[in-house]
Amino acid sequence: MGVSGKKILIAVSGGIAAYKIHFLIRDFIKKGAEVQVIMTPDAEHFVTKLSISTLSKKPVYTDFYSDNGTWNSHVEMALWADVMIVAPCTANTLAKMVHGMCDNLVIATYMSAKCPVFIAPAMDLDMYQHPSTKQNLELAEDYGHFIIPAENGELASGLIGQGRMAEPETIAKAVEDFFNSGSTNKSLEGKTVLITAGPTYEAIDPVRFIGNHSSGKMGFSLAEEASKRGAKVILISGPSSQVINDQNVELHRVTSAKEMLVKVFEFYENADIAIASAAVADYAPKEVAKEKIKKNDDSLTIELVKNPDILKTMGEKKSHQFLVGFALETQNEEENAKGKLEKKNLDMIVLNSLRDEGAGFKNDTNKIKIFTKTEKKEFDLKSKDDVAKDILNFVESQLLK
Ligand code: C5P
Image (cartoon, rainbow, N blue to C red; front, side):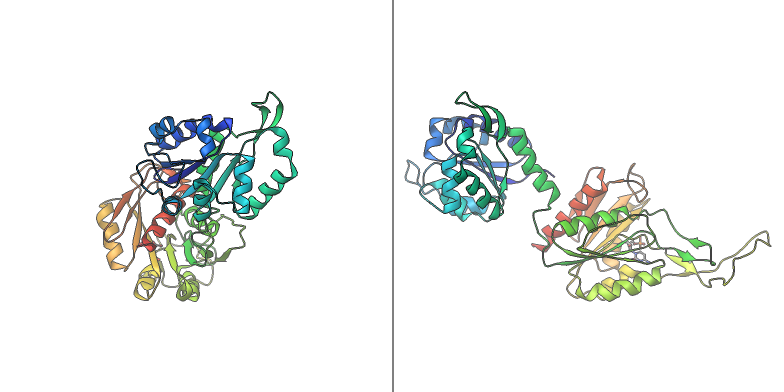
């Protein structure tokens, strides 16, 4: 995911480190981000609008209005941004930000922004150590902003110490990690997400069962990611060696499909999003032998009966829930997946084909396609943690519609 498709607002203030901003802009543009740069009037002493706008492919603004009389709306730019980065952030700009001294376009834009804000301070070492700077950085942190600390090294003054702006790669990584983790973006705050995971075991006798190779990894990754995004997660898992230590995740371990069905409907009514990633056994033995079956005969017949289709039942009882199913197919993949979307009354289905190497339920990786009634999206082979992010991003994009 990274910064691709993201709208990044960079505010440059007047420090010598401003020259490094070209590299950051070029990197973001290369990775598919949209970049809008604004500058304080002083920044123009260090870099030119022309060099920056050439790289960012957008006009650079320093004032509330342009020479041709057009208004540069700080509110519009602030609300446009997915993230704002103030780099380099001088002692002066930092102080103005945290105390609301709104005397230029950068500060007015910052104060109108609702997106996460990253601050990369840059100043001489004594200024960096000054109690006012320290206090202002603490205040900025209290406001929920991300500080990318200045680094140690040779400073423009010739002195050596902490104050150099973090390298563009460090700033880029902080922003990319933010988008990748989703951890600080509490986009599912207030939502309850119900997830089924793992296989089910259907008892034949006290020691044997019918099961499958599902590891539960996909469902546990989904649970972890949903929790990071602020959701309350109810995870109902069949037998799996996966563990989760997360106070936002309520884990219920079950064994059979029937037990899973009962547990699911304890929580379904209150769920906002329900994701069925469990590989539920389609059939279970009609009778469970009370004692261990002896190997007396040359053959053994076990009569199987159909298990309840948990997801289909969820589809039938759907009121407000956004319902997501999985389809693991070996042939006519897309057709079968779309058929299940219809038949089970789903809002979205995640298809993995066993024909794709690395996909399916035994691996740590997966390769998926997502379908809704009107959309289709294909993804590359990724770790299941990253696939979980793709799935939840897609769910969130659908909820916004
Ligand atoms: O019909 P099929 O088993 O291929 O559908 C797969 C989807 O249905 C998965 O999301 C799985 O969790 C769910 N399912 C279920 N109960 C069943 C069988 C499948 O919830 N008995």
